[in-house]
Length: 426
Ligand SMILES: Cc1cc2nc3c(=O)[nH]c(=O)nc-3n(C[C@H](O)[C@H](O)[C@H](O)COP(=O)(O)OP(=O)(O)OC[C@H]3O[C@@H](n4cnc5c(N)ncnc54)[C@H](O)[C@@H]3O)c2cc1C
Image 1 (cartoon, helix red, strand yellow):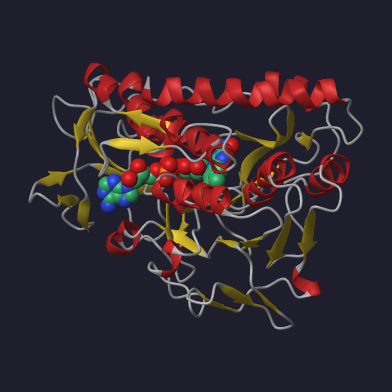
Image 2 (cartoon, protein in one colour):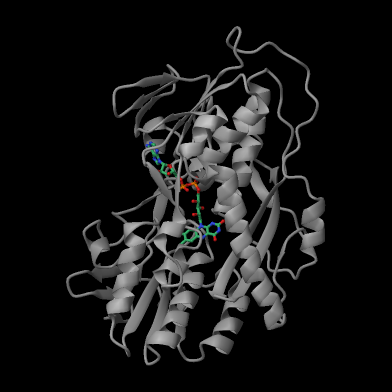
C-alpha cells in the first residue's frame, strides 16, 4: 500500500474498475448453454462473483456453494469487540439469491476433482463445471505457534473470523477489571486485512478510555511497520495518550509461544501476563484450496492476475483472501473488485475470447474512534504475473486533517459497508 498524500479521490472517480475489450464471437462451450460455473464460498468474493456472472450472461448456469446459512461479516466487527455495535448488524442471509438466478447449494464443498471438473458436496451431491471459482477466505494455521490451538482460542480469542470469537473477546473485555492489561498479538504479513489489528487496538483503547481508564493495551507485533502507521500513531497520541504501546518486531514484539492455561504470551525477551489476550494468528487460504490443488507451499493460491485462474490447475479461478494478489491487500473491498474482474474474464473465456487487462481498486477505511476515520487507497494492474500498485494513483488520508475530515471519513466507512453488503447480499 502506498503512503503518499492524496489527491486520489479525483483519480479514483475517473478510474475504470475492470475493462473488457470488444471480443470476436466464438461458440459457447456446451451446446445451447453458455457454460456451467460453480463458485465455492459465499463471502464478499464468491457471492459477488456468482451474481456478477449471472448479470453478465443470464444463460450461464451458476451454482454458489456456501456452508453457512448466515454470513457474518468481518468489516466493522472491531466495533462489536469494542461494544459499539451489535453482532446482528454483521449478519447477512442468502434469501435474495433466489431472485438472482444463482442456484444456492447450502453445503460444504468437500472435494474437487480438477480432471473430471467436478465438486463433491457434504451431502453426496456432485456438481460438474466448465469453470470453478474458489473463494473460501482464510483458515487459521493452528500449527504455527507453540501452545496455540483451537482449544487455546477459547481462552485467547483470535476474533479473525467474525461470530462467536468476536463476542468472546468483547465479553472478556467487559469482564476485565479497570486497570487490567490487554495484549494484542499481530501477525507477520500476509494476513487478512492489514490495518485491522491497529483499528482493533484503537477501538479497544476507546472502550478502555471511556469505561476502564486505568487500563493499558500493548500490541506485540511480528512486523516493523504497518498499514497507515503514521495516521494511527498520530491519532493514538491525540486520543489515547499513554494508553497504547506498540512493540515492533525489532523491539522484541514477536510472540514465540503461548500458554493458554496461565494466559501468558512469550517473546524472545519477555513474558506477558495480560487480563485479556487477543492472539491474531498466522493464516492460510481456506482448506478447500488444498483439496483442489491450487495452493502452493505458502498456503495461499498463485493466480494469473488478468483472469484469476490458478497457475496450478486449469479452469479453476481463485479470488478474495485465498489468492496471492501481489501488492493488493486482502480485504472485502479487494475481494469484491477481484470477483467482478474474474466474472468478466469468465464470461469472455467461456465464449472463447481473451479477457482484457483489468485495473482494480482497493480502499480500506479504519476507525480510530467512532467519529474518527482514516483510509488508504490503491489502484493495481497486472505486471510480471502479479498485481502491482500504480505509483501515485492511491494514497492515504492527509496526516494533518481537521477532526471534521476524520468524522466525514468515519461516516463514509459506514456508507461503504452498507453499500457493499446491499450489493452482495441485498
Ligand atoms: C476484524 C476484521 C475487520 C475487517 N474489516 C474490513 C474492512 O473494514 N474493510 C475491508 O475491505 N475488509 C475488512 N476485513 C477483511 C475482510 O473481511 C476479508 O478480506 C473478506 O471477508 C474476504 O472475502 P472472501 O470472500 O475472500 O472470504 P470470506 O468473506 O471469509 O468468505 C468465505 C466464505 O466461504 C465459505 N466457505 C469456506 N470454505 C467453504 C467450503 N469448503 N464449502 C462451502 N463454503 C465454504 C465460508 O463459509 C465463507 O462464507 C476485515 C477483516 C477482519 C478480520
